[in-house]
Image (cartoon, rainbow, N blue to C red; front, side):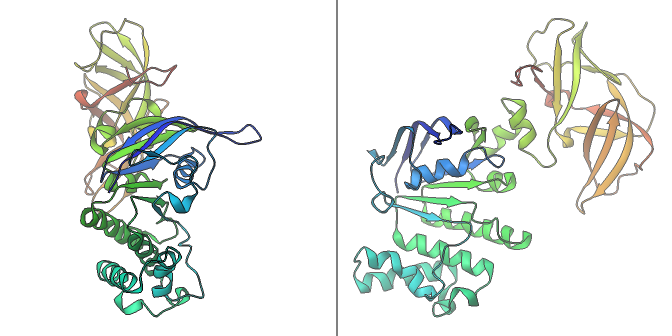
Length: 357
Protein backbone atom coordinates (compact mmCIF):
# COMPACT_ATOMS: atom_id res chain seq x y z
CA UNK A 1 0.00 0.00 0.00
CA UNK A 2 1.10 3.64 0.35
CA UNK A 3 1.76 6.62 2.54
CA UNK A 4 -0.41 9.71 2.90
CA UNK A 5 0.89 13.10 4.00
CA UNK A 6 -1.07 16.26 4.72
CA UNK A 7 1.00 19.41 5.25
CA UNK A 8 -0.49 22.62 6.68
CA UNK A 9 -3.86 21.92 5.09
CA UNK A 10 -6.43 24.67 5.52
CA UNK A 11 -10.06 25.09 4.48
CA UNK A 12 -12.01 28.34 4.66
CA UNK A 13 -15.43 28.56 3.04
CA UNK A 14 -16.44 31.59 0.92
CA UNK A 15 -18.54 32.94 3.81
CA UNK A 16 -15.39 33.07 5.96
CA UNK A 17 -16.18 30.01 8.07
CA UNK A 18 -13.00 28.18 9.08
CA UNK A 19 -13.41 24.40 8.74
CA UNK A 20 -9.82 23.14 9.00
CA UNK A 21 -6.75 25.02 10.21
CA UNK A 22 -3.08 24.00 9.79
CA UNK A 23 -3.74 20.25 9.62
CA UNK A 24 -0.48 18.30 9.28
CA UNK A 25 -0.30 14.51 9.52
CA UNK A 26 1.92 11.78 8.10
CA UNK A 27 0.14 8.43 7.69
CA UNK A 28 2.55 5.54 7.42
CA UNK A 29 2.24 2.68 4.97
CA UNK A 30 -0.43 0.18 6.16
CA UNK A 31 -1.39 2.39 9.10
CA UNK A 32 -4.99 2.71 10.32
CA UNK A 33 -5.58 6.35 11.32
CA UNK A 34 -8.87 7.48 12.86
CA UNK A 35 -10.04 11.09 12.87
CA UNK A 36 -12.42 11.67 15.76
CA UNK A 37 -14.13 14.66 17.28
CA UNK A 38 -17.54 16.29 17.80
CA UNK A 39 -19.81 17.28 14.93
CA UNK A 40 -18.45 20.25 13.01
CA UNK A 41 -14.82 19.75 14.07
CA UNK A 42 -13.60 19.39 10.45
CA UNK A 43 -12.89 15.67 10.29
CA UNK A 44 -15.16 14.87 7.31
CA UNK A 45 -14.01 18.02 5.50
CA UNK A 46 -10.41 16.83 5.91
CA UNK A 47 -11.31 13.42 4.49
CA UNK A 48 -13.13 14.98 1.54
CA UNK A 49 -10.08 17.14 0.77
CA UNK A 50 -7.94 13.99 0.65
CA UNK A 51 -10.49 12.44 -1.70
CA UNK A 52 -10.55 15.52 -3.93
CA UNK A 53 -14.23 16.13 -3.25
CA UNK A 54 -13.49 19.38 -1.39
CA UNK A 55 -11.09 22.06 -2.59
CA UNK A 56 -8.33 23.13 -0.19
CA UNK A 57 -7.66 26.75 0.65
CA UNK A 58 -3.99 26.07 1.40
CA UNK A 59 -1.54 23.24 2.04
CA UNK A 60 -0.50 20.09 0.22
CA UNK A 61 -1.68 16.49 0.14
CA UNK A 62 0.66 13.77 -1.10
CA UNK A 63 -0.15 10.10 -1.72
CA UNK A 64 2.88 7.83 -1.95
CA UNK A 65 5.07 10.92 -2.29
CA UNK A 66 3.10 12.41 -5.19
CA UNK A 67 1.31 15.74 -4.59
CA UNK A 68 -2.32 15.29 -5.63
CA UNK A 69 -3.67 18.80 -5.00
CA UNK A 70 -4.56 19.36 -8.66
CA UNK A 71 -5.73 15.82 -9.42
CA UNK A 72 -9.45 14.94 -9.71
CA UNK A 73 -10.77 12.19 -7.41
CA UNK A 74 -10.58 9.47 -10.09
CA UNK A 75 -6.85 10.01 -10.55
CA UNK A 76 -5.85 9.96 -6.86
CA UNK A 77 -5.94 6.16 -6.53
CA UNK A 78 -8.16 6.21 -3.46
CA UNK A 79 -11.40 4.39 -2.60
CA UNK A 80 -14.02 5.92 -0.34
CA UNK A 81 -16.70 4.22 1.75
CA UNK A 82 -19.59 6.52 2.67
CA UNK A 83 -22.01 6.38 5.58
CA UNK A 84 -25.01 6.12 3.23
CA UNK A 85 -23.40 3.28 1.21
CA UNK A 86 -23.83 5.20 -2.11
CA UNK A 87 -24.86 2.07 -4.01
CA UNK A 88 -26.60 2.26 -7.39
CA UNK A 89 -30.15 1.03 -6.65
CA UNK A 90 -30.76 -0.37 -10.17
CA UNK A 91 -27.57 -2.43 -10.20
CA UNK A 92 -26.98 -5.82 -8.59
CA UNK A 93 -24.28 -6.33 -5.98
CA UNK A 94 -22.00 -7.72 -8.70
CA UNK A 95 -22.63 -4.74 -10.97
CA UNK A 96 -22.07 -2.25 -8.15
CA UNK A 97 -18.72 -3.84 -7.35
CA UNK A 98 -17.70 -3.97 -11.01
CA UNK A 99 -18.81 -0.46 -12.01
CA UNK A 100 -15.64 1.44 -11.08
CA UNK A 101 -13.42 -1.20 -12.68
CA UNK A 102 -15.36 -1.03 -15.94
CA UNK A 103 -14.88 2.74 -16.06
CA UNK A 104 -11.15 2.06 -15.90
CA UNK A 105 -11.40 -0.48 -18.71
CA UNK A 106 -10.22 -3.33 -16.50
CA UNK A 107 -10.32 -6.66 -18.40
CA UNK A 108 -13.46 -8.75 -17.74
CA UNK A 109 -11.58 -11.75 -16.37
CA UNK A 110 -9.70 -9.48 -13.94
CA UNK A 111 -12.98 -7.91 -12.81
CA UNK A 112 -14.46 -11.35 -12.20
CA UNK A 113 -11.39 -12.45 -10.23
CA UNK A 114 -11.39 -9.37 -8.00
CA UNK A 115 -15.12 -9.64 -7.31
CA UNK A 116 -14.74 -13.32 -6.44
CA UNK A 117 -11.87 -12.54 -4.03
CA UNK A 118 -13.71 -9.65 -2.35
CA UNK A 119 -16.94 -11.65 -2.12
CA UNK A 120 -15.15 -14.50 -0.39
CA UNK A 121 -13.48 -12.11 2.03
CA UNK A 122 -16.76 -10.39 2.95
CA UNK A 123 -19.17 -13.31 2.67
CA UNK A 124 -21.07 -11.81 -0.28
CA UNK A 125 -21.03 -14.84 -2.58
CA UNK A 126 -24.75 -15.59 -2.19
CA UNK A 127 -25.78 -11.94 -2.61
CA UNK A 128 -24.09 -11.05 -5.91
CA UNK A 129 -27.30 -11.11 -7.96
CA UNK A 130 -29.43 -9.15 -5.48
CA UNK A 131 -30.34 -5.47 -5.67
CA UNK A 132 -29.43 -3.12 -2.78
CA UNK A 133 -33.10 -2.88 -1.71
CA UNK A 134 -33.04 -6.63 -1.04
CA UNK A 135 -30.17 -6.29 1.45
CA UNK A 136 -29.96 -5.38 5.13
CA UNK A 137 -27.98 -2.34 6.27
CA UNK A 138 -25.03 -4.48 7.26
CA UNK A 139 -25.06 -6.31 3.91
CA UNK A 140 -25.16 -2.99 2.03
CA UNK A 141 -22.17 -1.78 3.99
CA UNK A 142 -20.32 -4.99 3.11
CA UNK A 143 -21.06 -4.33 -0.56
CA UNK A 144 -19.69 -0.79 -0.19
CA UNK A 145 -16.56 -2.29 1.37
CA UNK A 146 -16.31 -4.83 -1.44
CA UNK A 147 -16.60 -2.10 -4.06
CA UNK A 148 -13.68 -0.32 -2.40
CA UNK A 149 -11.59 -3.50 -2.08
CA UNK A 150 -11.84 -4.47 -5.76
CA UNK A 151 -10.36 -1.10 -6.69
CA UNK A 152 -7.11 -2.08 -4.94
CA UNK A 153 -6.40 1.59 -4.16
CA UNK A 154 -3.36 3.08 -2.48
CA UNK A 155 -5.49 4.58 0.34
CA UNK A 156 -8.92 3.66 1.74
CA UNK A 157 -11.09 6.50 3.07
CA UNK A 158 -14.01 5.77 5.41
CA UNK A 159 -16.53 8.52 6.22
CA UNK A 160 -18.53 7.43 9.30
CA UNK A 161 -19.40 4.10 7.62
CA UNK A 162 -21.21 2.62 10.63
CA UNK A 163 -23.36 5.54 11.73
CA UNK A 164 -26.52 4.26 9.99
CA UNK A 165 -26.38 0.81 11.58
CA UNK A 166 -27.98 -0.34 14.83
CA UNK A 167 -25.80 -0.94 17.90
CA UNK A 168 -25.38 -4.70 17.41
CA UNK A 169 -24.57 -4.34 13.72
CA UNK A 170 -22.07 -1.56 14.44
CA UNK A 171 -20.12 -3.91 16.70
CA UNK A 172 -20.15 -6.67 14.07
CA UNK A 173 -19.08 -4.34 11.25
CA UNK A 174 -16.39 -2.78 13.44
CA UNK A 175 -14.92 -6.25 13.93
CA UNK A 176 -15.23 -6.90 10.19
CA UNK A 177 -13.33 -3.72 9.31
CA UNK A 178 -10.63 -4.57 11.85
CA UNK A 179 -10.17 -8.07 10.39
CA UNK A 180 -10.21 -6.60 6.90
CA UNK A 181 -7.37 -4.23 7.75
CA UNK A 182 -5.31 -7.07 9.21
CA UNK A 183 -5.94 -9.18 6.09
CA UNK A 184 -5.35 -6.47 3.47
CA UNK A 185 -2.62 -4.55 5.34
CA UNK A 186 -4.18 -1.42 3.87
CA UNK A 187 -3.50 2.25 4.51
CA UNK A 188 -6.73 3.63 5.98
CA UNK A 189 -8.00 7.07 6.98
CA UNK A 190 -11.22 6.62 8.94
CA UNK A 191 -13.60 9.33 10.20
CA UNK A 192 -16.01 8.80 13.09
CA UNK A 193 -17.67 10.74 15.90
CA UNK A 194 -17.78 7.53 17.99
CA UNK A 195 -14.75 7.39 20.27
CA UNK A 196 -15.35 3.66 20.94
CA UNK A 197 -14.80 3.02 17.22
CA UNK A 198 -11.70 5.18 17.36
CA UNK A 199 -10.23 3.35 20.35
CA UNK A 200 -10.88 -0.15 18.98
CA UNK A 201 -9.84 0.43 15.36
CA UNK A 202 -7.07 3.00 15.19
CA UNK A 203 -3.31 2.41 15.26
CA UNK A 204 -3.25 6.13 16.02
CA UNK A 205 -6.10 8.49 16.79
CA UNK A 206 -6.31 12.13 15.71
CA UNK A 207 -8.57 14.11 18.06
CA UNK A 208 -9.95 17.27 16.44
CA UNK A 209 -11.73 20.31 17.81
CA UNK A 210 -12.82 23.41 15.89
CA UNK A 211 -10.84 22.42 12.81
CA UNK A 212 -7.58 21.84 14.68
CA UNK A 213 -5.68 18.78 15.83
CA UNK A 214 -5.64 18.58 19.62
CA UNK A 215 -3.67 15.34 20.01
CA UNK A 216 -2.33 12.44 17.92
CA UNK A 217 -1.42 9.24 19.73
CA UNK A 218 -2.07 5.48 19.89
CA UNK A 219 -5.24 4.62 21.87
CA UNK A 220 -3.71 3.76 25.27
CA UNK A 221 -1.34 6.77 25.54
CA UNK A 222 -4.21 8.97 24.40
CA UNK A 223 -6.45 7.57 27.14
CA UNK A 224 -3.87 7.60 29.93
CA UNK A 225 -2.02 10.81 29.12
CA UNK A 226 -4.34 13.37 27.51
CA UNK A 227 -2.52 16.58 26.69
CA UNK A 228 -5.47 18.85 27.39
CA UNK A 229 -8.85 18.88 29.07
CA UNK A 230 -10.77 18.60 25.79
CA UNK A 231 -9.13 15.30 24.87
CA UNK A 232 -9.49 14.03 28.45
CA UNK A 233 -13.21 14.74 28.42
CA UNK A 234 -13.88 13.49 24.90
CA UNK A 235 -12.05 10.15 25.03
CA UNK A 236 -13.47 7.59 27.45
CA UNK A 237 -16.90 6.23 28.40
CA UNK A 238 -17.85 7.48 30.92
CA UNK A 239 -15.62 10.52 30.41
CA UNK A 240 -12.94 11.70 32.79
CA UNK A 241 -14.15 13.40 35.97
CA UNK A 242 -13.10 16.98 36.67
CA UNK A 243 -13.15 19.07 39.85
CA UNK A 244 -11.60 22.35 40.84
CA UNK A 245 -8.69 22.19 43.27
CA UNK A 246 -5.98 24.38 44.73
CA UNK A 247 -2.44 23.50 45.75
CA UNK A 248 -1.96 23.61 49.55
CA UNK A 249 1.18 23.27 51.72
CA UNK A 250 2.70 19.81 52.00
CA UNK A 251 2.05 18.89 48.35
CA UNK A 252 -1.66 18.66 48.95
CA UNK A 253 -4.61 19.32 46.66
CA UNK A 254 -7.40 21.14 48.45
CA UNK A 255 -10.75 20.09 46.97
CA UNK A 256 -14.29 21.18 47.95
CA UNK A 257 -14.91 18.26 50.35
CA UNK A 258 -11.44 17.19 51.44
CA UNK A 259 -7.71 17.12 50.68
CA UNK A 260 -5.86 14.73 48.39
CA UNK A 261 -2.12 14.09 48.04
CA UNK A 262 -0.51 15.77 45.04
CA UNK A 263 0.68 13.10 42.57
CA UNK A 264 4.41 12.41 42.74
CA UNK A 265 4.62 12.97 38.99
CA UNK A 266 3.15 16.47 39.28
CA UNK A 267 5.51 19.40 38.69
CA UNK A 268 6.45 21.77 41.48
CA UNK A 269 3.43 24.02 41.88
CA UNK A 270 3.23 27.11 44.04
CA UNK A 271 0.96 27.00 47.09
CA UNK A 272 -2.39 28.54 46.24
CA UNK A 273 -2.10 27.63 42.55
CA UNK A 274 -5.52 26.86 41.06
CA UNK A 275 -5.85 23.78 38.90
CA UNK A 276 -8.40 21.32 37.57
CA UNK A 277 -8.08 17.76 38.82
CA UNK A 278 -8.97 15.03 36.31
CA UNK A 279 -9.41 11.33 37.05
CA UNK A 280 -11.02 8.39 35.23
CA UNK A 281 -14.10 6.71 36.77
CA UNK A 282 -12.22 3.42 37.28
CA UNK A 283 -9.53 5.16 39.35
CA UNK A 284 -11.93 6.24 42.12
CA UNK A 285 -13.12 3.93 44.90
CA UNK A 286 -16.43 4.84 46.55
CA UNK A 287 -16.66 3.44 50.08
CA UNK A 288 -19.09 3.46 52.96
CA UNK A 289 -17.93 5.30 56.06
CA UNK A 290 -16.99 8.70 57.34
CA UNK A 291 -14.39 10.80 55.51
CA UNK A 292 -10.78 9.84 56.25
CA UNK A 293 -7.48 11.61 55.54
CA UNK A 294 -6.70 11.53 51.84
CA UNK A 295 -10.34 11.05 50.80
CA UNK A 296 -13.22 13.27 49.73
CA UNK A 297 -16.69 13.29 51.25
CA UNK A 298 -19.49 12.57 48.83
CA UNK A 299 -23.09 11.45 48.49
CA UNK A 300 -24.48 8.84 46.12
CA UNK A 301 -26.95 10.42 43.71
CA UNK A 302 -27.89 7.52 41.41
CA UNK A 303 -26.57 4.20 40.13
CA UNK A 304 -26.59 2.99 36.53
CA UNK A 305 -26.42 -0.79 36.21
CA UNK A 306 -24.59 -1.76 33.01
CA UNK A 307 -24.50 -5.52 33.50
CA UNK A 308 -20.76 -6.18 33.81
CA UNK A 309 -20.27 -3.00 35.87
CA UNK A 310 -22.12 -0.13 37.49
CA UNK A 311 -21.72 3.63 37.17
CA UNK A 312 -22.18 5.32 40.54
CA UNK A 313 -22.96 9.03 40.26
CA UNK A 314 -21.67 10.95 43.28
CA UNK A 315 -21.81 14.58 44.32
CA UNK A 316 -18.80 16.01 46.13
CA UNK A 317 -19.70 19.60 46.94
CA UNK A 318 -20.35 21.35 43.60
CA UNK A 319 -18.64 18.56 41.65
CA UNK A 320 -20.54 15.66 40.10
CA UNK A 321 -18.41 12.54 39.61
CA UNK A 322 -18.92 9.09 38.09
CA UNK A 323 -17.31 6.06 39.72
CA UNK A 324 -16.99 2.74 37.89
CA UNK A 325 -17.68 -0.15 40.30
CA UNK A 326 -18.53 -3.88 40.16
CA UNK A 327 -22.24 -4.49 39.44
CA UNK A 328 -22.90 -5.82 42.95
CA UNK A 329 -21.95 -2.56 44.65
CA UNK A 330 -23.45 -2.16 48.12
CA UNK A 331 -23.84 1.60 47.65
CA UNK A 332 -27.35 3.01 47.39
CA UNK A 333 -28.76 6.38 46.23
CA UNK A 334 -28.95 8.92 49.03
CA UNK A 335 -26.11 7.39 51.09
CA UNK A 336 -23.04 9.36 52.13
CA UNK A 337 -19.72 7.90 51.01
CA UNK A 338 -16.04 8.67 50.89
CA UNK A 339 -14.04 8.79 47.67
CA UNK A 340 -10.51 7.43 47.51
CA UNK A 341 -8.51 8.52 44.45
CA UNK A 342 -5.59 6.58 42.91
CA UNK A 343 -3.01 9.34 43.32
CA UNK A 344 -0.81 8.14 40.46
CA UNK A 345 -3.78 8.37 38.09
CA UNK A 346 -4.64 12.00 38.78
CA UNK A 347 -4.05 14.42 35.88
CA UNK A 348 -3.86 18.16 36.51
CA UNK A 349 -4.92 20.80 34.00
CA UNK A 350 -4.42 24.54 33.82
CA UNK A 351 -7.87 26.13 34.39
CA UNK A 352 -7.13 28.95 31.93
CA UNK A 353 -5.62 27.10 28.96
CA UNK A 354 -6.91 23.56 29.58
CA UNK A 355 -3.41 22.17 28.96
CA UNK A 356 -2.13 19.32 31.13
CA UNK A 357 0.36 20.49 33.72
